[in-house]
Length: 471
Image (tube, rainbow, N blue to C red; front, top):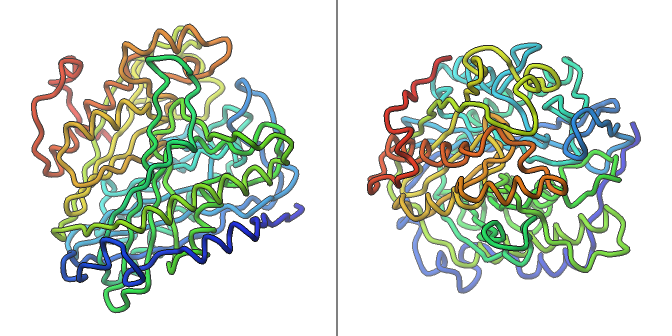
């Protein structure tokens, strides 16, 4: 396969490098505080190259079974892992440059639940399966790991599973002492909603970073975790070159402009939220990606200017199971048994009930949540209003991929009415699944130690739900 390395625009990169931030370099909040103000954790990072060695079907654009075969490589794609530990419990946060992976597959044991089980085994239980969060970047220029757009050969899925397990174990073995800091920047102008009118016109524009500062060298970042809500669709449907789109490109650029060993970019609540590419008319797809990457990375640098420490070196996590009745009026449930590669046997599909998981992890006073699809901004908004965490991170397409998680449910009708021009209602398990996921996340937040007010009335149908993992 032809290898075409993505080259960033030189001038913006020079500007970013000149303004890059580090602890002790200027006027940031972290500069006025001692690292003793933050708790000491153990942090490890690793990455592995998962670029296919032969043409593959790319996922993300068009109707089911449409085909878009790759013709080359714009930039290598990776799976990147960040492991955080308090010395007693550890969590793994993983980003994969793929379109979206399932908890379990029909054709073999290479689902994300299988990955988590093997990580538990290979680490001797140090990273329990419930402490593994693997998120797809949702790149529309990456391998079709869902089967919706013709899918992949088993050999590549096995290769991907092997490297996802391996990179987590690599990061676990690389654990070193570090202090954690968080920061945010407003990147709303880099986003647009697919709906221009209320109630679905709002986007989630906060860009969040978690910085792991080496315990022995305050000028060295062991890791930078970046969390932002844009769909990975800067590269349009005409592109057939493999790319991680903006998440991988931003990770690479952040490593250039910040003093970090590695960056991990986790897609956030990307439901209905697209990158704002105003002013890119006439540019090639790689030029559009370069411009958007530079814009997002500049916000990452901004977020490192006002860092606050993570207190209390405690780490814990939980994974909860939920069952949602399939109620998509556009595609029948048989689609899950036919076109899509997702497992069609219990607990993942039991009659008309789809089974899936949500994840929550607490690192000191910070909450990390993982959702099994493309969350609408209403889910994070509800969590931020009810969970008293210092900072909220949300990871989309985490441990499963069930399409759009529309929330709140009363906003569904507008989405359904737009189905001729918008695919959000088509790629959706049911009108209620977004609220169901949100309510289960509230339960997960309690499980990891946060004290919450009573749940909203929309959670009443799920109050007695059994969230025990059946696998």
